[in-house]
Image 1 (tube, protein in one colour):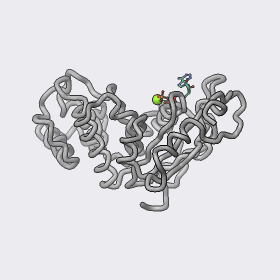
Image 2: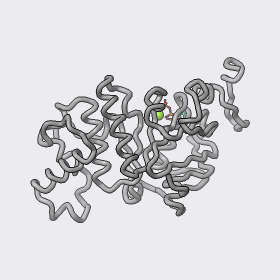
Image 3: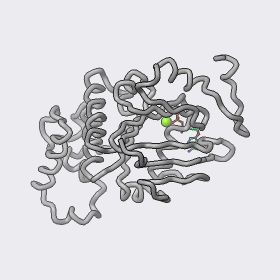
Image 4: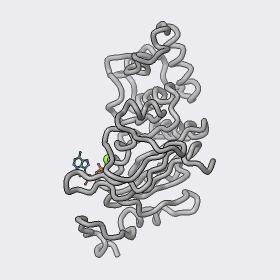
Amino acid sequence: MTDTALLELRGVSKHFGAVIALHEVDFRVYPGCVTALVGDNGAGKSTLIKSVAGIYRIDGGEVLYEGQKVHISGPREAADLGIEVVYQDLALADNLDVVQNMFLGREELESLHTLDEIKMEARAQDTLQSLSVTTIRSVRQTVAGLSGGQRQSVAVAKAVMWNSRLVILDEPTAALGVAQTRQVLDLVKRLAEQGLGVVIVSHNLHDIFEVADNITVLRLGQNVAEFKRTEVTQEQVVHAITAGKLSKVPGVVDTTEEVTA
Ligand SMILES: Nc1ncnc2c1ncn2[C@@H]1O[C@H](COP(=O)(O)OP(=O)(O)OP(=O)(O)O)[C@@H](O)[C@H]1O
Ligand SMILES: [Mg+2]
């Protein structure tokens, strides 16, 4: 692990009308590390990710990428920085094959024009192989015929193929069975081993404790705790998710404190 964060959010706020989705959130992601982002429903996890992905524009605070201040005002800027977000189901086109999916949406990129089908196929195959994804029998099969875990693997491989530095996975294992979850978690670990920064959003603490190096807890739009995985128990993380200490945020009524105290 290096000292310079790959991605750093400083005091980032995001409002939707009167709703404070993020309130002065600090968040750091290091290269070669898996950072888990956890929190209850509505805590602000997806809002944070969408802000980093350029889908939402933040209202306050700043974003640093490799120590430099950046303004990510659209998905294209995020992609140019090497930031890729993998969503559970949205990322792939069912009627296209694995290769077509991995090149989809990159038509404007320089090298694509010089690539022929065979080269594209080889590149897709190499990428899957470099991630030790071995369960996909043919890269020419349509994605509709893949399992949830295989689809997720293709989506991650696609992200990696385009020189990503930061891969963000929003609930990657939510709909997966045991074996498929295993496959995706292994892939997450390999991404970090290859030096990428990885963010994983999950409600499954078991998964998180298996892959994460660092754990950041959001609650009602605030960063209420940061842990190193090796220095914390699942009970402590659950406590932070449900009853972490909060400073008073204007407009936010905290109803959980009394119940859980
Ligand atoms: N586009 C939007 N317009 C208005 N309010 C929004 C919007 N997106 C999110 N919010 C609100 O912001 C808060 C944070 O929502 P967000 O989706 O980031 O939570 P989350 O942590 O991802 O929750 P979950 O675990 O359920 O996915 C919630 O109160 C939500 O209602
Ligand atoms: Mg969400």
